[in-house]
Image (cartoon, rainbow, N blue to C red; front, side, top):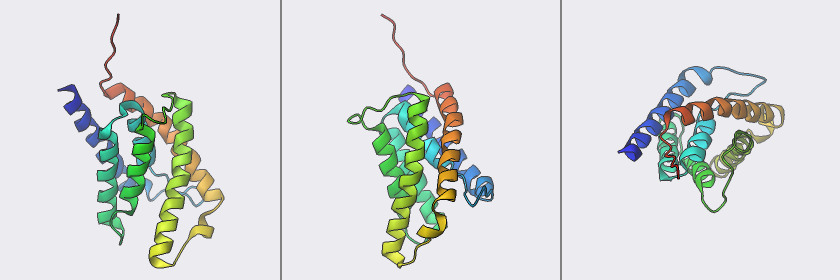
Length: 166
């Protein structure tokens, strides 16, 4: 029962983040950069839940974003899925601290930009790669890291995390 509630809560967090991203935060431009609410949300959820729930939630939101806003289906979904799998992976064993999540979010922002730029360049032979580096990418990465700090508080507050006393 608790696992089902976590899936529902994950869906709600990602859906609200998607709505806020597409309606409000995509219009806010800070030094040429836009905040991406979905990346910090995916990192926070993957870090707390560390399960398939976060990974498939990231895939779903990526597909939703692709269907609504891009010409190529699956590009953002791939990026978000890889990010969720990487953070939630047991083989890497990332710490659950806020500092680790902050750093992972900054790295995820850079990875997301590079992967999307590479795929769009391969598909269209057009790239805005050099137009976006370095200041806007650095600003976006830092803003995403700061947004992560808010998300981790929200996720830890509402997700069920079993604790056992012995």
